Image (cartoon, rainbow, N blue to C red):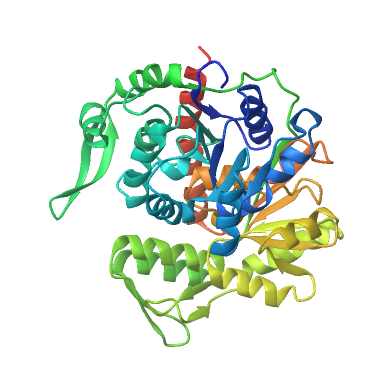
Length: 432
């Protein structure tokens, strides 16, 4: 980071990206820096990390969260490092424009650089011009290819402008990908040409780095355990008929409709979990079986009071788990829950990978993770694992328990493995 000034750092969760970056900024003379991060990370992680290291003493790191007045106070204080959530980028740009439009940050850090993969958003378009005034730009992520190789363009543009992969996303796509699916005249599916991965890897190599295995203390071992959850035959019939006909009648007599194959696939996933939304707006759902809850109950019994982190995907899953494990289960909602977990005060804590999958340190409170329903995203899966699989974990291993209900859950697990392989190929290219 010190040598290149503009660099993307691709390191697994728990490898110390925050401390590495703060050290680099200190070595660079402690320039005035803006850190953009997920809200929970901006609020709790950066200033706490800086306070833990002797060599960062005197480095003022502040969190610009809370009310507008609180954020303005931090901006006016001009700390060495100001951590701001991605959601408040628009607010900051509007404020700076009101004050004369001068970008005051010599360095910009993108914590979870993958948040910049969507180049068509107004957030991206506005920010791409502002950060050009930062001579130092650092991107941090464990998953540069969370879902698709095409995501890498926006991430690398924020780090190095057009130099890594060209000036426009459209030009990048036309050069390296070909359309596989068109809907209403719009391309909605892309596949890379055979030559594309190796060429993209070559072009980003001067602007990105990762850490070879063996050059850092090993992380705790991850042991994945798939728990087969047999579904009742009538639920399997419902899932099959819904996928085929886009409509079924539940045992209660409720008619369930899916208006597209993708909606049907979502509802089939819900059926595997034990309940399905029966209204388009998600205001009502109906329980169809309790097999995953029973499997989770068996797992809790086996753990004999050892803390368990439970990942869920649908809101009704969280509601049903909380009701079933009343007095034991607790929903993660912020720093107070993180601290309680790490003090060993929580036996079961529910986390959604979109809100607790980045930057939250939970390694001190337990070493078991159960997936009630897997996320579709490899990035979210890996990041949630990383809350426990990180340095400081008190156990040498972390147990991951995947509750798999039927063919749909197994298919998701297989696709996530394929996405991981694509990302592993990119990271390996940076070391060759």
